[in-house]
Length: 182
Image: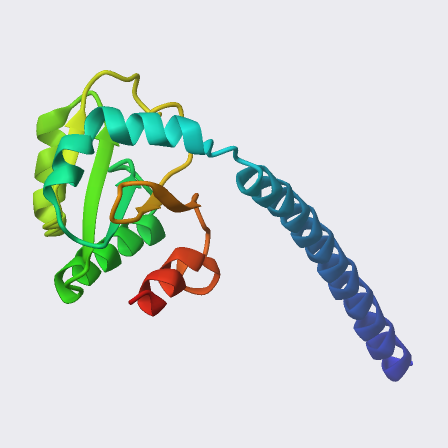
């Protein structure tokens, strides 16, 4: 009788654990589906080469013309970006010091120039960054997701554009392009 009672309790516990794990699996699948929908949205962002070209030529063309480097990377970013984005920008700041034929410029559209300047100084980013105050909080030149990287050739023409990449070390193409460019 005791064995029957023991096995019944074990069976009930196994059923309860199974139901709990099934529910957890259902929740994870639901979360994964939502994440996939977000990824589709991010990957479908229209970066618009003409729009980017106008922004770069309006704000940075004077500085870019002064430079004689072969490849120029313009990064449009927000100082309140996610930690991986800030890590990526730090990578470009270090890359800027290592390559002779490469230059990096930042472009930020934020209502508080002093706050952004302090943030850049605290991050130890040594590439020139232009901070423009003319936009509403939370958007950069009409883009809600950043950083946006625009690679320019020696003639200041757009060579490659890369929008926000969730895993920039693995999925970012611009890093491999620049490491291979001579």
